[in-house]
Amino acid sequence: MLWLVAALSLVVMASARSVRQQTQRVGLDLERMRVESVLDSAIELTAQQMLADRNAGSAYRFQRLSMGGGDVWVEITPSGGLVDVNVASDALLQTLFQRAGGLSAGEALILTSRVRDYLDPDDSPGGVGGAEAPQYRAAGWPSMPRNGALDDLSELRSVLGMTSGLYEIIAPHLGINGQQRIEIDSAPPALIDALTGQPGLGARIHNSPPETRGSVLMTGPAADFFSPARGGGTTVRLKAAVRLEGERWWQREAWVDLSERPGNLTPWTMLSLEPTRRLNTQEQELKP
Image (tube, rainbow, N blue to C red; front, top):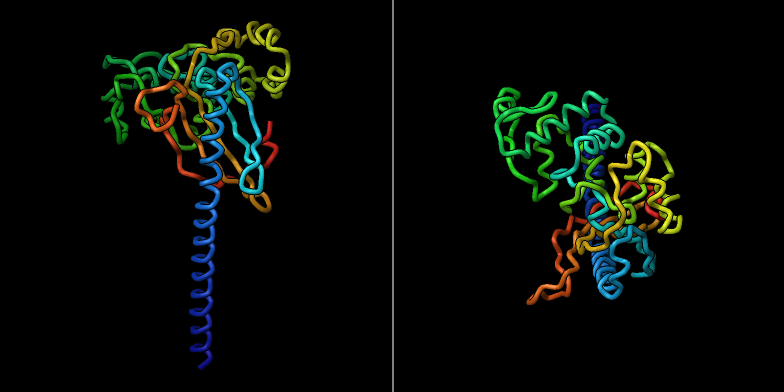
């Protein structure tokens, strides 16, 4: 009899746990739907503001919007302030993989060679540890080299040796802009810190007068990675984030082209819109 009671107790406990989990999932789904409309509105409002103030389009910045009874933080990153793996120098890619991604110098060198081979049109492995189709097949890799420039940055996951963890780390630093160098005014502080190996330098540069920023980054080991801002680009990445009760954050990311196109429903073009996702990020990491 005792064993039957114990068995029934376990069944009841498992059932209660399942109900709690389902309730939590439903609650999170409802919360996601509620904040998604707020985040979408923040992205659209920011795009409208940038169209009205073309001069601000080339500068990296945060802005705070009061919406839905709370504050929404929007990170604005012009594409010129990010790393384009299609045209970036080997030195820039190696530094990104090593300092931002945490790879050793040797690992960064090999992965850079493999990125180059993934993109170039030939079938001959280049550099140290390069890989073309035969090496992909020998490794049992699920994809083959693209042999062309990337249109979708997520395809970088398909490079032999690229892990999901490493991609998630470097993805915030990537963009497609056709530029070999990074525009100083457009670069996020975290990217400046990573490439120069000087924590806090990015924030100090952005807080300094525009005419003095170049003097800091145009000298030293990372000088070849940066260029003065051109201000001619129209593509920006907008990340809208809102914090609910406690430390629970939600974020929505969009790529927007601010150039006007006849026939569009909006004065800008939404190039991509990522699913709204929950973050375990402290507020100070999202604020300027």
